[in-house]
Image (tube, rainbow, N blue to C red; front, side, top):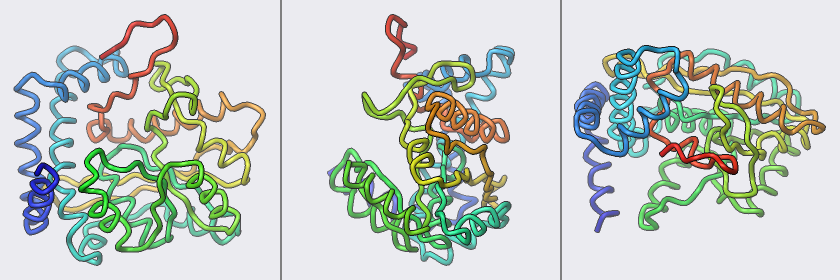
Length: 292
């Protein structure tokens, strides 16, 4: 029943223009801010941890702004997933740094595209699928009734989505050996045993080693990509950013720290559009009290 209701909601949103969707998202964000709940609590905790230099008032403003962006994420998803592909791509008004990916692919070593939870990451994924035919790991949605919808929506412009299993990781290595592009979320907390602690905004965060291992084993460059929302629903601006070389397998800690620093640098460009309501610091080092 819940899966069916979500599908109907996504279909309804697909008919609405982007300015209306983002306006509705702002309204939802205000509701999330005014009514105490997990979204506001987690966002406030993360922002207090990561931006201690801000006054209490400025932290509060950032919480309010990021919840408005969370609302936009929820409302824009139906439009990004269910509208015709070319319509979705036309929403991306500006692209900077695309030549970095084209050059990496031309060199024949493939490329790893790292897409943090910043801005409209679904739009970034659709653009990269259409232009670079990416192979991407994914975690199945919590509601099995949505899996076919999600996979069809994300792959309709190209690309291949494979489950985050041992077999799926082997497929990523194979894709890179063939000189193609793979994509993943670099700031998603991994399962137990699949990560190490590395600083993120100065806070130890349990972070994946997969991206660094892929780069080290294949000698493949890593390029960050994130999709900034333009004001008033005018569309999106896509950013590609090269990160320092992490292909040296000798120091995994340094490679993961460099990856987190690259995520942090992207976030600092547009802090309100980061998904601060995600429990990024859920797993703590032994002996530390939980944050949430």
